Image (cartoon, rainbow, N blue to C red; front, top):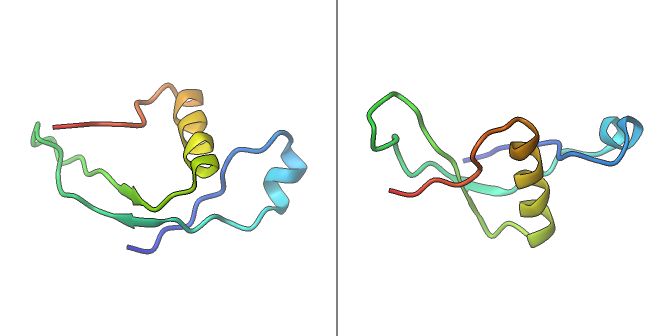
Length: 68
């Protein structure tokens, strides 16, 4: 799956001028609850990218990780 994400930065200028990150991703399928929600599993993501992604989810008050 091709995906492009702009990760959080320290200021708006850095955020607006960054090229999007393109981590490898796969869709493992629908959520076990059957509520039409789908997840994305990031494969081979650098630790720094993963930390920024978790920071983004925390800012939006969402859970970054799910398990069955």
